[in-house]
Length: 75
Image (cartoon, rainbow, N blue to C red; front, side, top):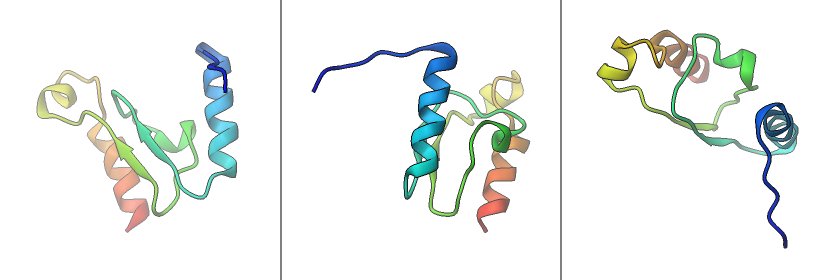
């Protein structure tokens, strides 16, 4: 198996392609935006690991509202 490195648009194209065919999704990201469903199709059972610390949200790097959208959609 050889390693392939992708970045920018090609990286997101690859992630979205693989996410569509996977049974579940686990994503580890630095930040959550206001519209997480615009970036990825999240389903029940998917896992998102992100920095939602008070400092990160207060500074506007992560969106508490975006994270709540994901949580409310899964419940």
